[in-house]
Length: 483
Image 1 (cartoon, helix red, strand yellow):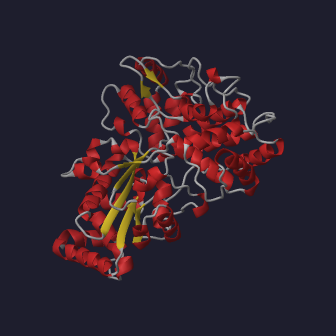
Image 2 (cartoon, rainbow, N blue to C red):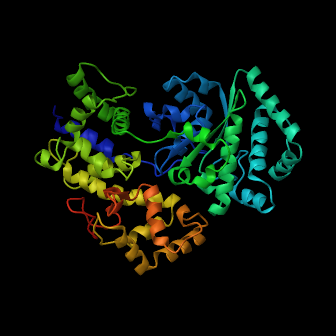
């Protein structure tokens, strides 16, 4: 199937105008029309699944924001055929920017002060829960989290009675209540504060399973999930057993692309023509093109089937995903859309496709830099760790990385950055041993930046390697300095 020249121009213009967001906030949800709901993400919205884990850019804050916003929640309840969501009242218990916008979520400064005053995280989060349910029950509560947490500690029976009554209230209303916790890495400025506060949230989520209509949902980063200390409490395995891993399958990424193309009348018409020729059925802005059997020929019409003159360079449909994937074999929506947007804006447009393999390679180069910048929002130390590896070739023994970091004093730089940013450094460096550079490798493995190829060698996927200006035989080249 081939596109006409004018059709290529229309689709190219739409791709050029894509504006993939760098991040989302639970307190500022994406517009409904920008939300794509893959089937695999359905469990992340199930109020009976308390823990959702994902790396940066996989959609944790998108879904926490979607749950917290009533209009969006009703829309996704319809899209996913989850009517219970439209019968659920939701409050944010913590999120990025807490304390700066209206709501009951305490700020990280408040939480730090409470910890310094000796108030247990367990009582802090029960106090937050009491304030949250009172928004709907009308029960009078102290305005101060500190006073309420102190009351909770001194009056356990009265506290339990208030929560039982809240549970009964929602039962009579034929509703559920959900408290959502997002951006747990912003709970404090150090792991010394973050760990006990996270531990307290998880305990609360587990305890709330004992009520009929009160539930908690916790969105957590991958590296935090791998930190055994925060799960050090009785029955923590019950939380882990129901964990939802948030990731994007290649068919979901292409489904997102076609949703965006069909949402614009300029590209909807040519996509509809191709789809009719392929399946004898029409499409609309609400159609979900989710099977590879349909996605592949449609995308081949847009980008060409091969990353060169034939199959030896790879097939476009799979090549893009492979070269944007991290060490967990996961590709984020932003990296994918950035690649296509930059490919559409690159060099001389091809004559018989919307984009070509030259533009796609340039798009991957751009996406690499943007992905590292995106990770830097959560891990401000990561740029220094990668910059100091410039010029090295992978795969290589871990000792090569360690040697370079020692030469550049990378660990000291990371500790300085952590202090200045007031954001936590690598959790693996807490209580550092005599081999901090080796622990830094563990940290990068835990967030998908490094993969272990064998006992002797490690590798860095292209999505990070290109931005770090590292080498790999046959890999995408880092961009030239003049680009």
